[in-house]
Image (cartoon, rainbow, N blue to C red; front, side):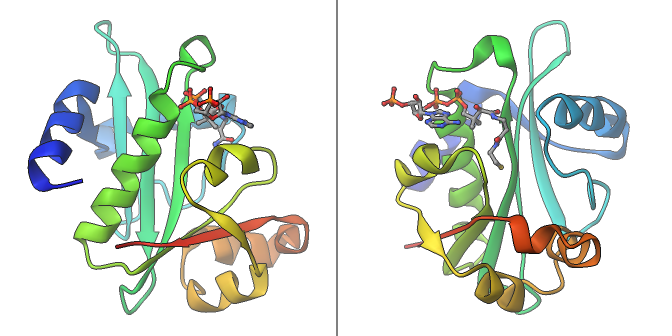
Length: 162
Ligand SMILES: CC(C)(COP(=O)(O)OP(=O)(O)OC[C@H]1O[C@@H](n2cnc3c(N)ncnc32)[C@H](O)[C@@H]1OP(=O)(O)O)[C@@H](O)C(=O)NCCC(=O)NCCS
């Protein structure tokens, strides 16, 4: 996807970067999607929101880079239940992948226990979760999952960014 296409996608999705004022709405939205809440206000975590005309959060997407910037942990990709199955999830995921690549990341990783087939459609393949936790050791999700023991129950996925 080139820069023109990225801009078109952003316009079509009306995505906006998440700000401090968005945190309560984003928090509630991610609770409903059963996704990780750690680091939502961290400067290293880049998040975008999709709101409807009434201002309600209908989608989210984002990533957090490794300390050196080579690896990106894709996170918080979610679509409101009522809007699922229309291709929005793919658009939101691609948006985070494009922004991570723009930021210089060479490889994308993520945790997903339930949506593997969705991520496979975007080129992700099963990955070693210990490797993920090693290259993205400083990220909020990895830190949380290590501290709670959830890391051992997680399923890791990865793909190159080019
Ligand atoms: C995963 C999620 C973002 C998908 O959103 P969506 O808008 O329904 O996805 P799309 O409409 O773009 O789906 C694209 C394709 O993936 C498939 N797909 C979507 N979610 C899937 C899932 N959970 N499992 C398997 N396949 C899935 C769709 O059937 C569709 O396939 P098709 O092209 O053959 O018809 C959404 O279900 C969601 O918010 N889930 C809860 C949060 C979550 O688990 N996020 C991922 C971890 S970060």
